[in-house]
Image 1 (cartoon, rainbow, N blue to C red):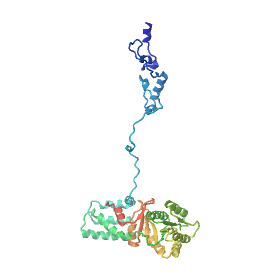
Image 2: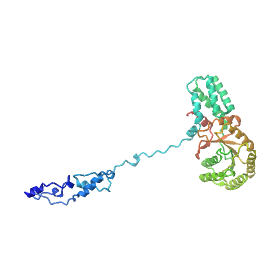
Image 3: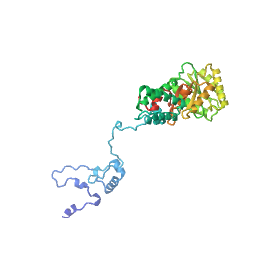
Image 4: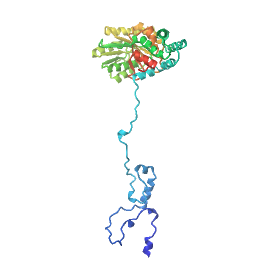
Amino acid sequence: MFGLFKRKKKEPADSVGTQSAEALLPSEDSSDAAPAETLPETPTSGTLASAAGEADSPRASESGIEAAVGESDAILPAAEPVAVERQPQDAIAPEQEPRKRSWAERLKAGLARTRQNLAGLFGRRRIDEELLEEIETTLLLADCGVEAAQWLMDALRRRIKKDGLTDAEQLRDVMAELLTELLLPLQQPLEVEAHRPFIIMVTGVNGAGKTTSIGKLAKYFQSQGKTVLLGAGDTFRAAAREQLVVWGERNGVPVIAQEHGDPAAVAFDAVQAAKARGVDVAIIDTAGRLPTQLHLMEEIAKVRRVIAKAEPGAPHEVLLVLDANIGQNAITQVEAFDKAVGLTGLVLTKLDGTAKGGVIAAIARRCPKPVRFIGVGEGIDDLRPFSARDFVEALLGIER
């Protein structure tokens, strides 16, 4: 009887919901009882309490531990993580890198200011004198200059009359044809195969991007398989020599420089080094100056004469770097530098969204010089040979 009461005695509170080892064993009174097997030791109350506490913690959710009331052998150690099924590596979309814009897209972005002004004029409206006056005003505001704007408007009126145009949308293609006709003579790529070394002298005012353009030119010629040498002839501007040396290191080309040298002497040494090393192209920097500084303009003329003494017939190309943001001042610079050193080509820089772009039309009418390269940004590959058709399509927003 006491055994009966003892058998029905209530289990301890810390083992509620679990079965004791005694209950798991077969009864001693069973006639066909099997031999007893060694069973896992029943967890103590402390173990269960620890597991229950860990089940409520963030770590428990990470390791897959759950409070296992009634299944003592299902309790896992907290430090042993449960494997989590993951997607295959190729099923996880990689982070998308920003796509690099094409040259056409960068050029279009650089001419966005003028293109947006012109785009509103070629909408659905009738052609009348008011529209033509608006187009002329927009061309003038885009730095086309009076001569170029007048030429374009006269040619546009003749085409309207000849073709019987009535819709403003038709004017976009006509304007593209006329602008291409105006700019096409400036499209003359620079060929450097005629001489070896081919000597290029680079001039321009301070801040036009002269030294930076030289670094980009070095990269451009290298991409064509040419060997390049640079001459740091800008000995006046602070850190100009160091800046060119950095460009040389970036492109892996030698730079001839003197810490306190005369610009003409540096140019002479650069030509001699180019000849001795057998390089294909030598690009010589010069100090920036304003066209109104006559004594400095005479000095740059001296540099040109020294280059000619070092190599008869050189320099083979004299480039003027022009900031596209200076408007009609570009005409003054072209005329002054051409008089001093005899320009053979232009580099138009900073077509980066702030420039209006029309100044190239003014150059075509007033002082036509080949536009060898145009630059649309600070990247090393943001300088490309000028294409009249590409330029006009970007200016007017025409898609091929």
